Each structure stands twice: as structure tokens, then as C-alpha cells.
Image (tube, rainbow, N blue to C red):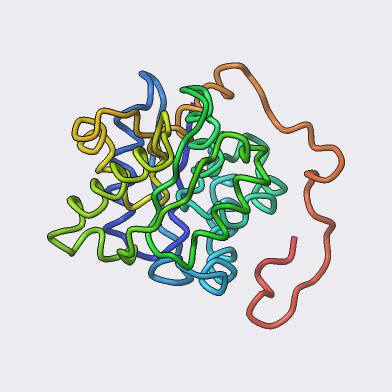
Length: 242
């Protein structure tokens, strides 16, 4: 089976980290690669960033379909463009927030999410509601580290770890969900430090896609998630006409 992980931002160093974490859990015989969006923001930390990340993500999905990719992971915790990507793809498309929250819900009565900036807390709460995870999500906490600083700030690992520890204690949570793809490589370290299950959405989404492909599950192609109707697009979006 062939799985592609799409980083919807344009920072290639983050894609490399994401790819390593995804490959670490991919099963024998799974061909997995990660790609960086060719257009959009360097990081996704606002509604504006998220909106402008979607064209690059969809271009990557469309290219994957031409290359025979069977399933996709959207490696941004906002799960940008998820529904549109599912229209374009024949196989499963899974967002890392969706996969991480669902995985954490199996581990106890509740989980906490630790994300980057406080401005993303509300959108994370919205995702929990969308995915039916409100009853499990006991809190969303920001560590106030910008996404790109996760790889450059020498104190980032310590700050994120302590934020996860505090969230687990404050919310009395049974698991922690890491609310950024850029935190993927911190997962095992934080788990060892705080003694609570820590879920990285990149790994969780990779295994979800792999499981669905193993089951032989594909999109029905009917109704809302059929291919979008053919029509012309204008201006910068002209190449996106279906």
C-alpha cells in the first residue's frame, strides 16, 4: 500500500521530522513518503494561514491521485481542507487532530490537548465538537511557542513537556494529545517524563490510514464526497478547475 503524508505548510525541515515519525510506525510493505506544500504559509497559526494553506494541500492530493497514492495524512492539527481533500481522493484521507483525539478517547475517560499558541485554542475546541470528542476533551492548553520555534528554541522541549504535565494534573486527564505536527518527535520523551500516554497525531493518522487500506476500505464516490462538479476557475485558481 502507498500512503502520502502532506505537510500543508511550506517548511521542509518540519516535513522531514513528520516523515520520520510516520515511517517509524508504518508497517512492513507500506510505502510511505511525506511532501511539503508548494504554496502557502511557512506555518499555520491562524484562520488566515489555514485558509491559504488549502490550495497547496489540494494540489498535493491531486498529484498523489495521479501517482497512485492510496491514502493520505493531513499533517496539521487544524486538519485544513479535510473535506475538500476527501472529495478529490479515492482512498482515505485522515487529519491528525481527528486521529489523535479518537485514539486518545480509547485510553480513558478524558484527554487534554497541548497546542502551540493561545489563539488556536478555540479552533481546537471546535474540532473536538466536530469529531464528537467533547465528552472526552477535558481541556485545551497553549504553551505559547510558535510552530517554527519548536525546532529552534532550545527550551521548547522542556516547555512543552511541562505544559503537558500541568495539563494532565489540572484536568485529571488519562492521556495527552499533542496539538501540532511539529511536536511529533517529542512524543516518546514527554510520555517517559510525565508517565501518561501521549498521542502524536502523525503516528495515529498514519496507522488509521494503514488500517483502513488493510481492510480494503475506499470512498464510495457517492453524495457529498463525490468528485466536485466540473467548472472553470479564474485568476490564480485557474489550474484548480476540476
